[in-house]
Every structure is written in C-alpha cells, then in structure tokens.
Image (cartoon, rainbow, N blue to C red):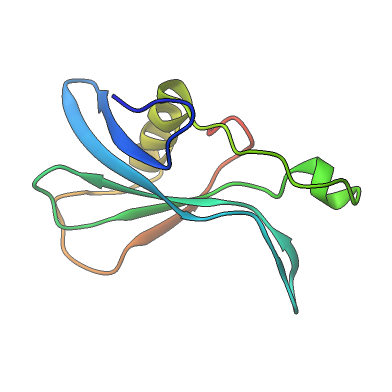
Length: 106
C-alpha cells in the first residue's frame, strides 16, 4: 500500500492492484499559468496507463508558497474509480488516457 509521504505506491481497488507514481508536481506554465499535479496509474499486468490531473492548489493561485503534496490510498482509489468510470480500459492498447479530477480525486 502507499503512504501519505511517498511519490509512488500500489493501491488495491475492488480486488485489482494498481501501481501509481507522481508524474508531475504543480508548476507554473509559461502559457497556461498554474497547472496542478499529475499522477500516473497503471493496472498491474496491463498495457494502458491513465494520467490523472488535479487542479492547481488554491494556495498557489493566491501567491502563497508551495506546500508538500499529500497523496494517500483513499485519494488514489478515488482517482482510479474516476478514470474507470470515465472510460479508461487498462487492458486496451494505446496512448495513456488523460483525466481531470477535482482536488479530492473525484
């Protein structure tokens, strides 16, 4: 299982294991402003990856300093369920699918 301080881990959702890792931390884009963090999710023994993008934290939009990202099993599980309900098929082939979620991973 993952922990709240790691940048990678494994989470079990409905009896299926998914590996995840932090793909990109929130950053300032020259042309698009602040962009939120992105995590990569891949079902074990599957081919197609899901990239889950979070909105930029409100503290960054207000000009406050960056804080440490907190990712836990519950948030990652919600991300997996959101990607699956939006049409992600982990066993299919092709480019990674990109999904937008809210700050809670829904």
